[in-house]
Image (tube, rainbow, N blue to C red; front, side):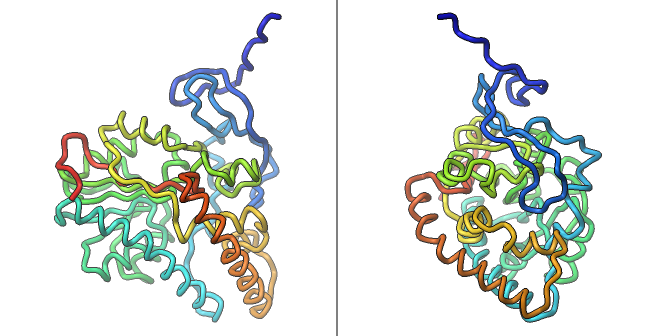
Length: 329
């Protein structure tokens, strides 16, 4: 029997230019409901990289990233509890970055790309580390300055007003999957890092159990904001191409893995989703929903710990060094 031809897509793979691929899922913006447009999630037939298809036009991004996308805490009880929770779970990230800073030799600044409101940088500054943030969003950079007291720049990493080889660590937490050209950002990071510097990245892991369970309803897909969906192998190839070598990998994040599972199950309870959807709720109802969501997160914790122990966690975090740099301490 003749083998049928591989399906042809209207958009080529950004990694290898192949137009062959298979559709893994289809869906719209389930989380924030910014659009009804349907997108496909496609695996390249040649290199196996998973991507959104088609990619949205850059001029449409303002609809998919509304102003409320950037977290700035309010002054009510629910916001204070949420801020305390965020500080607790972010200690996991802060510890990972702090170790990378020590491995880099403890000289130079920590640059957090996509810093949002700057809470992670504040935790690192509290440890005595020199920090600076960078974000596309002016409200986010402003919140980093005024709410968390850390310096932040509004702009792109490829045009960051920072000297070459001035950073000990460059971090990108949930950034690469949003980029049309992640190679340009990694090249820019390489340029900014000191010879012994470290790159820390975190992305949703397309090789996780949650993707197998939920398909297009997995929160890590996040149609249409996530353009690329990485597995560890994809990241290693990308890092190698940009002059980096992975030295440490982690599949569990206390902030992201349990919450991601909870959001996959009940997106309408997600606090950020409710803000962006402008859900009408009294302060009391908001507090009840927040506690319900927190309960779901806690219930998700055992499963997410098990999948991470099997190297199939819903996120992957990597510390990488420049090729030829001194080995990790």
